[in-house]
Amino acid sequence: MNAFGKRGGAGGGGRPQFGVAKPMKSSSSGGSAAAAPDPDEAEQFPPVSDLTANLDGGPEPTEAGVAAMDRLNTRQNASGDAASSKTEGFEAAVHRIKEQVLPRLLERVDPEAAATLSKDELAEEFRPIISEVLTELKINLNRREQFALEKVLVDELLGLGPLEELLADPAVSDIMVNGPDQTFVERKGKLEIAQVQFRDEEHLFQIAQRIVNKVGRRVDQTTPLADARLQDGSRVNVIIPPLSLRGTAISIRKFSEKPITLDMMKGFGSMSEKMATILKIAGASRMNVIISGGTGSGKTTMLNALSKMIDPGERVITIEDAAELRLQQPHWLPLETRPPNLEGQGAITIRDLVINALRMRPDRIILGEIRGQECFDLLAAMNTGHDGSMATLHSNSPRECLARMENMVMMGDIKIPKEAISRQIADSVDLIVQVKRLRDGSRRTTNITEVIGMEGEVIVTQELFKFEYLDESADGKIIGEYRSMGLRPYTLDKAKQFGFDQPYLEACL
Image (cartoon, rainbow, N blue to C red; front, side, top):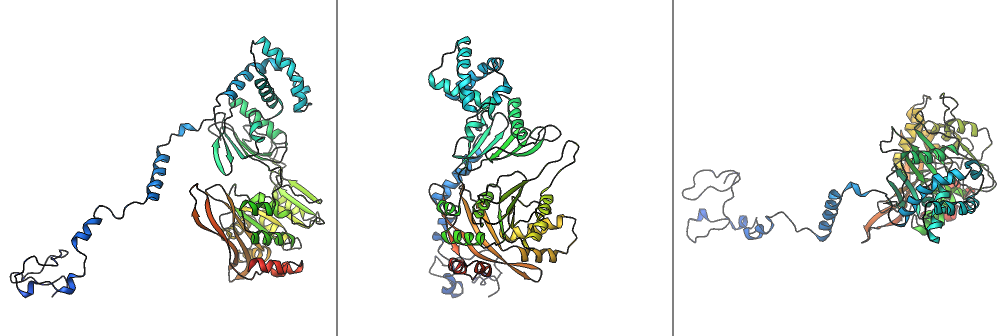
């Protein structure tokens, strides 16, 4: 016997070739004893007939696997030309008539006088003039078409043109204009093409200018980027050519008229009842909270909901690039940054406002978003008598949130060792609330994490709650559960100071 098998029989004095299997069973009854296979060896491998069944590539594909591959093939073969927002039917007819009526209407109307009227008053004034123009053009419209035409014309003169009907739609949460020929909206977490159109690039640019001019900003070749807000608080970003290659791009994050509360978010399935209890107590007990998440994950909504728990007797100062927070507290002062002028002077940054806010006797400071070195000033505020402060930050996990805060402090001119920065964060921040928009469009609170302190050079955290993915329903909805870790919270002492220690402990365990 050698390492590679048995020697051959009578004629097999030579060594067998490496990797060549000898037959396990002899087909002839004769032969020497040496040629007979060892029974123990014969059972080492399954019969050849059993092996041939799997020669063509492994297990049979499941129905789910086939369906998944079909989706990939469909996506690969889909045409990119389908994303066009050219309107059809009734809306298209109204817009065509509007293009004929508008020039003649402007000849008969004083734009400055029209700007002083409300939309309803303007529609009333327009009605007879529109009838005259339609008669001149020999266009006959029924009552429905005439009302639609009046609305479109009023929106064109006083409002934001085609965007007005999207802004009026309560189901729309985001509006994304990618040039004059393509507009997308988000409904229930899903993107879809919107059936609106602009005349041309000039028409779209005029609307963009109208938006930013109302809040004292500008957009032109020297400043092709601008952040603004609408009268209802909706957040707007504008970017124009040559930076945007498809023409003027407008992104609008709509403001919810009805304030979202933690109980409502619980009802939507964004968190469990115990998590809602924890966050209510965190807001009321002046814990320092950082809300972490990606774009469109619901950070600002969460911040607004948490702010509802602030004591009405406290002075709250909010600081934002474009004001969108809507607090219901009586003693609330919103501050907003200012961009530089044409000479590049006069800019007021978030950091400037944070430093100034410390001189305004605030009880709490709330930052709309931490982006840079202002993080250090916020931490200093949290650690010097302004506990209960809150802020949002872009990151994918609580641990990454802490790392980003460290990096933001180091972006500044202050030369502090990294360990000292980490210690400052650990001493200042109490809770990190991680929010996420899942692939089915739903927004979930995926983590509530405590910041405990330092262990060596590392910030130590403790997870109180976590969302765990379980499955996906037939209609694509994600199924999961909010799981409590069953740990005693380190922030219990803060809750105890306000008399919430018992419900806080019960919710965590």
